[in-house]
Image 1 (cartoon, one colour):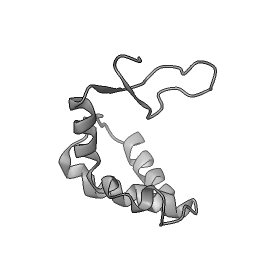
Image 2: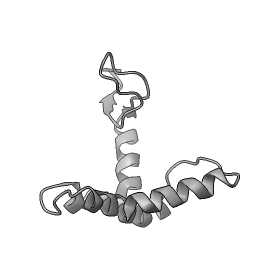
Image 3: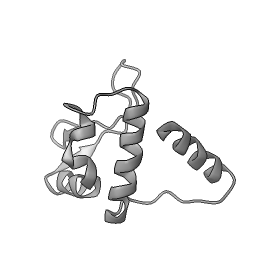
Length: 95
């Protein structure tokens, strides 16, 4: 279901003009719903995983806290790992 929702969103976005905007506090609930649906779709257990993590319900606040404490998002190739623009948070002194 989660991937179906993401696919539908992708189709809508391709058929219309849209803009990418920063995360807002109003995004917390819908983002948590989609992320949990995707986790279920991939068979991730509900206990002991991100599914049960209360931070999933307040991603905007967590993002704001990371930024306030000097963390930043790595949006560059990560050596020869094949990963690019991964959601890896590093301190500014390590980037």
